[in-house]
Amino acid sequence: MKRCPTCNQTFDEEWLSFCTIDGTALIESGPPRSEPPPTIRASGIPTNPTGQPTFNLPGSYNQPPARLAPPPPAPSWQPPPPPGYAVVPQQGLAVAALILGIFTVTFGWCYIGVLTSPIAIVLGIISLVQIKKNPERNTGKPLAIAGIVMGAVYFVVIAIFILFAVLMQGVK
Image (tube, rainbow, N blue to C red; front, side, top):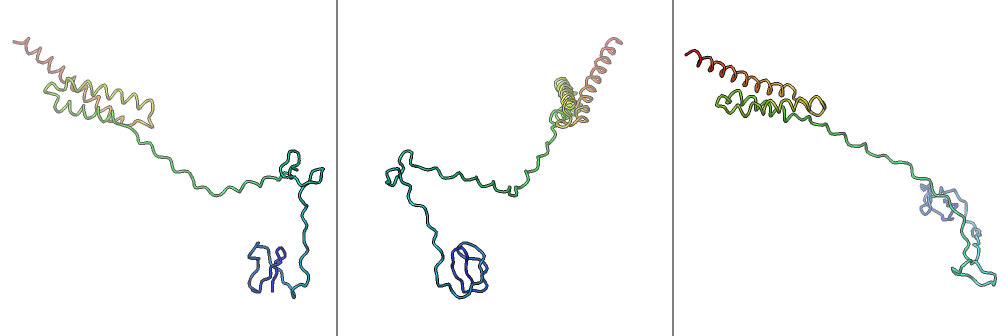
């Protein structure tokens, strides 16, 4: 037979090691004791100087001793923060410059290139400026350069054709 030293509960199960009521370690006990455990007396109701019990009268309340706050719980495991998302580089202006440059070189001979060629050159220059300021965020330098070159090639070829036409007019 085992006994709890705190609550004096007895247990017949030999496999028990701890009290099922308060969790205190059980001790082996001999035959049951004949005398009950000692009684602890609590102090009585506080009284005022007249001997009457007081219930929330001003000045009659004795502040209990301050208890220390329990220590904060140990920090538990916290999951790691989510991984940072990769910044996708922007190359929209460079692609637009390239597309307009290709369009200018292929379909610009119908004088549509007079509109698309300067746009390709301007978009390519703006893209190169953005790439120079922030190369981690903006990419597409070869695309921008190709758009600028194709737009410029259109102007050079048109200038040659105009010069050739003027010279041919003077030869007559």
